[in-house]
Amino acid sequence: MAMADAAAIAGGVPGADLMEAAGRAVAEAVLERHLPRPVVVLCGPGNNGGDGFVAARHLHAAGWPVRVALLGDRSALHGDAASASQAWKGPVEALSLGLLDGHPLVIDALFGAGLGRPIDGIAGELIDRMNAEALHVVSVDIPSGLHGDSGEVMGCAPMAECTVTFFHAKPGHYSVEGLRRCGSLRVVDIGIARSVLRAIAPQLWLNAPVLWQELLRHEDLGTHKYARGHLTVLGGATATGAARLAALAGRRAGAGLVTIATPHEAMAVYQAADPGNLIAEVEDGEGFGRLLDDKRRNAILVGPGSGLNERTRTSAVAALATGRPVVLDADAITVFTENPASLFDLIRGPVLLTPHEGEFRRLFPALSAVSGKVERTRRAARQSGATVLLKGPDTVIAAPDGRAVINVHAPATLATAGSGDVLAGMAAGLAARGLSPLAAGAAAAWLHGDCAFRFRRPGLIAEDLIGCIPEALAAVILGDPGTRQER
Image (cartoon, rainbow, N blue to C red; front, side, top):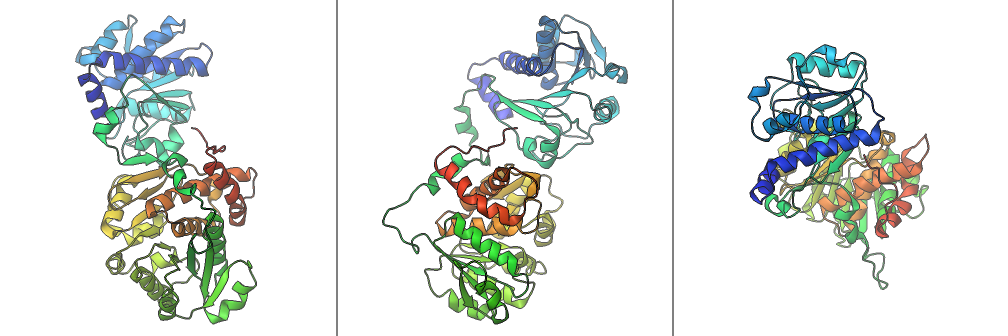
């Protein structure tokens, strides 16, 4: 964003015009959301504070009772922020807890996305009181204290009802804490040309169908089931439901065939389940490798319910040796956590790892101290050579080349047993259709969340997700994903 501001100014847009547009957008958000009421604008010492002065001026002109308070001395302001403060003709108070007496509406213009140290002192005390009293807060750019890149809270940060940001959203807006604290997120145009993006060359995207939907639209009338891909899933002896969920999700996601490789003792269970699943008896990794000699088996999923055992480990090794698309989930990740390098050394082809946070920490222990989920996932992808899908309400999918996608299209109802197995199966089914690991992971994560939104009632379980896949796919393929949740 600093580069975007600088490029816009170098291209002839005065910084004062950018600040005027930003502050006006904040005032407009307040005017749209509230009837006139007392408002306190808390301004910081940088450009974020300058935006606050502009917002205060516009609200005062609209007839609102406005108080403005500044962290630091007005004489210390410089540049566009100093000019914005001079254009405000009302008094400027020092920060104090008394500003919040009477429960005013608060415009949080203290600190922006580039804050580099934890908030403390009177600013921290004000934020704590805002949260304790559940005041209505509109934040400028990002809730003060929320780091724009990592999404971590720097000491404290307000729980805003609305956040107005400029040009493009920041990674921090879509972190777990960002989702909790930003409220309704408005991304507004302040006059920065879209061409600026070409120079910045972003490598991070918010997940949406526009990124991958064209890959799902190509259907040939002359196609056949093998042309749509043959997914092979390693099934376990005991937790058989996981592989069955994954297999059915893979078929619903578009794989032409799905085979579950099962030990003899569980064959009857798998055979009695979904009749469209093919069943093959496989006792060990060597047998799994022989099954994969059929090159029509063009995508492989190992992990859901496969068990923490040598069979899972050697089957994963056999899968990786094919060089074909492989998705490793759950048990297939955990069996390598004592020696992660032994897994990474085997990764040569297109591979997608789908850990949750606990599995990620065990597989990449050195990255636990890295700030920010996006950066952790990118480093994990670079270290392993695989695309990594790190699950959560702010799922991040990162490729080894640095490209990454954040998925927040997911409700809390997905926290149910088997949900991850469905996600892994969807990703593997899309890989069988020919999608790259990054595209398959991004599409699966978005569609997975969309299925949960489409269920539209309490009591969601993993089996319900599978029934919603055709509707979610149809909406995306037709270009009208009707359940997208705008924040």
